[in-house]
Image (tube, rainbow, N blue to C red; front, side, top):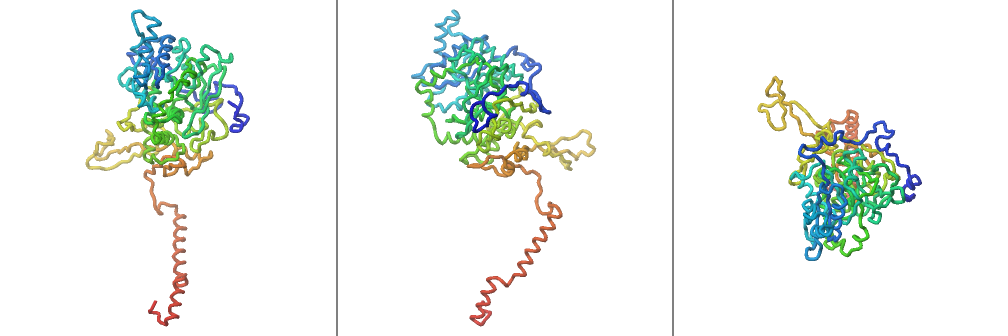
Amino acid sequence: LGHDERTYGKNGIDWVKYDPEYECGGDALDGQCPHIAKKSESLLPPERKKRLINVAIASYRDPLCPVTLFNMFTKAKNPSDIRVYVLQQNDPEVDVNCLDKYCEMMQEKALKADDPCPFAENVNIHHIHAKDAYGPAYARGLISADLSNAHDEGKLIPQDYCLSMDSHMDFEPEFDAKLIDMWNLSKNEYAVLSTYVASTEQLGVNLNGINEVPHLCMVVFTSSVRVHATKCARGLTKPKLTNAVWGAGLSFSKCHAELKVPVDIHTPHIFDGEEFNRAARFWTHGYDIYTPHRVYVLHNYKDSQSRAGHSGWMSNKDTTSSTDSSVRLNSLIDVRTFSDNMKVEEVKRFKRSRYGLGDRRSLDQLIDFSGIDLRHRRVSIDGKNRCGNIQWVPFEEHPKGVNFIPKFDANEDPIDFPDVTSVWYEKSLVKIEVKKTAKPSVSNVLVQNNQKDPTEIAVVHEPVVVSSAQKHGVLHAGKGYNAESILGKNLRVDSRILMEPARLLGRQHGITHLPLFVQFFSFLLVVGVISSVVITRGTGRGARRKKNLIARNGNEKLV
């Protein structure tokens, strides 16, 4: 758990024994296990007999990109099942082309005499010039768009596997099969394996003889929320559930996770905030982040970070654009910000957009589960960390199933209304009433077959969408949160709390709708004020001024 006793107390440091059974309910009376497909193969379409692994790589002027491809295809157990999507941000006059150099390496290896560049057809290179590179989040956003396009074209399906990583990696032998086996050990269809990857210097090494692995569970607050270093886990027998902390260096899941939670392409020039923001989106969509219990993919820190220009994209940085990106990321998760660039309606709309929060779990639930006090910029809501044993948070799956990928319009707004299992859906506000009409309308009307009166129709109003803050505000007000802030009518930006406005639909106003005793005392108060004015009339400063004028002039008419 680390050594920060000042923040987390004696119980929040040192080592704690991991209890994998506790994740699946533990002693909780309402405990449940994560969702797992009982007949996983039935989720595949008839034309597909197996799952592919789709690898997303963001490369910025990286000479190690072809080495990564070479390592991947030569060490995979089933290289023909791997599809690679590389965003190559290069200066073509200066930099090595990732695919061309890979082909040269494969020719030198002479793996197939009849194929000068094995598996080249499995690699898709998306070229952009290095001068148009706007940071890692923007780059990964472009790759997300490529994956989405591949899905639209039928090349990628939700039940495929997706691996997202950097462009300077190495692998253990048969890493592809081992990753799939490890993912299966989570027993969670919504599992995302993620961590800050170990160094390539540990390739083939059982660290400290007890399979010690990096474990993400901590953040710090900078301009946004930054994932902070790693803790350690050792001797694990399966992936460990984390408190929704995700790292971009390694992410392995079913592809429905990548398709439902694409990287936000509208965040150029950003570094801090990308990872936890996406973690929040993953978790509210129903996904759970797990620490891999074995190291199969490794990162070449030494060569990648020592080369000149590895972060050259920052020379393209636009301060205004960077600030806007931070505001956008912070607004989504209610982190206080010091700019009012996003207005009330913008944030409300953004939260339900293509790059918004999910609707399986609420942001309030995330704060409780992660232990991170987002709204007050504190690393803990209760002085405890969540690096040790934690329990899975239940949610209702979408009625259309795990493979359902929501659609959005050209403005990135959702096409479908929230379903009854959505956290945005409020059953009590679905209003049904009977009306009389001479000409029944077709729009939003349900006509019952057995109606006796053809002019009598049941009008079903569309579901009213309410925020998770409204549904959970009272609970959090009792846990140190300000109920007025959580349930406030106004979304406040600047150095205050961001929150969605309440939608007060159908509420009646006026004194006649108050309780009778309140109406009675209000009446007495009004009578008392009027009586006071009448009684004191003629005794104030105006009356004294009038008397003085009369005394001086002897003529009341002069007043």
